Image (cartoon, rainbow, N blue to C red; front, side):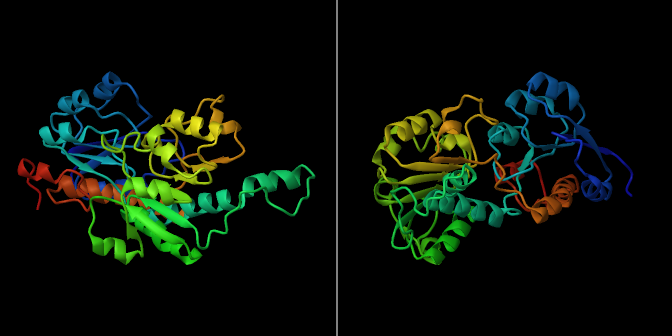
Amino acid sequence: MAEQNHTVYYIGNRRTSDHSETIEELDKVGATLVPLPMLEDEDEIIEQTQGADALIVVEAPITRKVLESLTQCKAILRTGVGFDCIDVDAATDNGIAVINVPDLWTREVANHAITLLLAANRKIVGLDGDVRADRWTPTITPPVGPLHTETVGVVGLGRIGSAFARRITGFEVELVAHDPYISDAEFDAVGARSVSLDELLAISDYISVHTPLNDETYHLINEEALRKMKPTAHLINTSRGPVVDEQALIKALQEGWIVGAGLDVLEKEPPDADNPLLKMNNVTVTPHAAHYSDLSMALRPRRYGLEIAAVLDERKPMNLVNPQVLEVLPLK
């Protein structure tokens, strides 16, 4: 174990968390891990993270004010794909590397999106409820698409969107996708036809959303977008809740602009008990659990330690969100 001369705060510690592998990797660069509970107030975060050389963050708001208080911090790791809780520009301005972990649960999230789509198509939740309520009717209430020959639209062809696309083609669907930031070759690689967002909305029977959350994608699926969808279409979202305007979605479902939805993410998590989505039998909601598997959970702790240790050892991490920081934070 190296001499301990760095402090790493883990914000969002749970009683069941096992940090042993994170600690093992941090020990190699002389870093001590200090677990903290979930913190939501920026002044409290500032107070409890004084002297931090790095942070590991589950969901805490790492604002410009927080970042400017971290005078010796070199790295902040977000324990997932999305990093919208961190002011990345402010981190760059303050010479702090922002790291995410986008690759450990790609397959799990893609599989979960497929599951939500199939549950919507086959109306699994409703059928299960009927049987449990002693209603045995061997039909499914229309509309029930065949899936094969139908059109599936993918919004965002990053790691997860591409994994979803590769899987859904096995169901003999017509596959279209919208992503303005990738090459034609990447559409071809997953068998998708590149279309505009408007065309995707208009022709898809199922739309699966796989974008990050940022200024451009906030409420990307809004009332205008939902009105362009088929009245028989289903919306699937396993990305971030605010990518979809939830009030517009509720209105769309209530008024029949679309037929159903499958959601692993919501604008407010957990939702209020009176959220209308929870009362709709044409909506399946899961608790932001798409990322979860025994394997993905087992791989995380060591990865967190490896990434933070790399920066503290003046090496580049595997997934640097803000490469511009290298102009002021020299990493090999």
